[in-house]
Amino acid sequence: MFSIHDEEKLIELLESHGHKKFRYAQIENAIYKNFVTHFDDIQTISKDLRELLNQNCFYQSLEIEEQIESADSQTTKILWKTSKWHNIESVIMRHLSWRNTLCISCQSGCPMACTFCATGKLWLLENLHFSEIIEQVMYAAKLLNDEWSSLRNIVFMWMGEPFLNYPNVKKAIEIMTEQKKINLSNRRVTISTCGIVPGIEKFTADFDQTSLAISLHAPTDEVRREIMPVDHTYPLDTLMTALDKYTKKTRKRIFYEYIMINGVTDNIHLAYKLWELLKWRMAHVNFIPYNPWEWAGWVEYSTTPKFLIQKFQKVLDEYGVPSTIRVTMWDDIAAACGQLANKNKEKLEK
Image 1 (tube, rainbow, N blue to C red):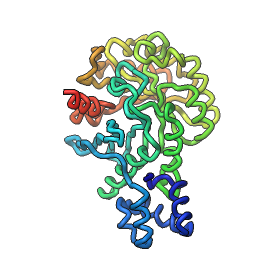
Image 2 (tube, helix red, strand yellow):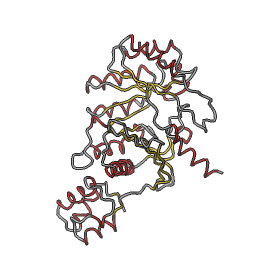
Image 3 (cartoon, rainbow, N blue to C red):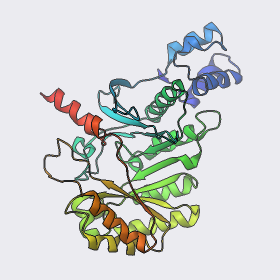
Image 4 (cartoon, rainbow, N blue to C red):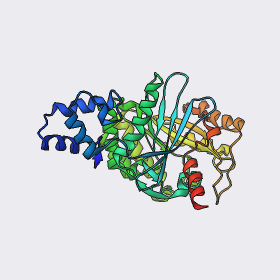
């Protein structure tokens, strides 16, 4: 059995049973445009062909373990179980402007061990196949379609480091942006990385229109290494050189994620360091208030007060580096990355 999203295998199956190429186009249209989720409902193909699909293909391997909505119905978080019985998460964010965004996972767990991240506590459990990434997208797209809305943005900014599962992430992006499939604009797909330089270099070569976000979180190696072990392997000088090559080729600005942790990343002198790092670069900073989580264990972080975040931001404003403060939409459903998966893990271990 293989995923219906594996075009190469599906065409091979059809051709081996004497079907013409246009049959794939009919199946493709039913799956991606009409949101058909059961092969028996594809009325444009014969009963025999529907049976062939049932015998050889599956539409979805992920199972929903839990799905919860925020009180204002703007955010939906889905906890999935993979075929290997590991958990992953995805989150749908409905903005009032109808700019619906989906944050998706590319790994179960994450090996990067950032001290502030709930996903890092799970470590790496498995890399997701490209079809499992697409399944998250198709579920959200159908859910929004049923609400008379549509999916606009995809962000690889949930569980996992995309550049440590790059072949599957690359294939998933190709499916997302294929006109006859999900048909999203490349510019509305964003990869978020903690700074895996070889991955950034491959991404720069492969996708000159897809957006890039960097989990920076500190403007000096000294502070960054305290919270992000990746900085030992790819320090800021190495990282920024790779990012300069990306902006030179694409002419696209980079989004820099900066987490505000009280007493760790919010000292005002770091605001000036951040300005110095980004002042001549095509950059936009996104300040993220730290979201405390129950199972932090070895660290006790707290959120920077809002007035201090604004003070920090003012330094960048004064020197012309654009920035925003992220508005949290999901505190009531424990929707920070990895929280539901950790919660479920705690249940299973009891």
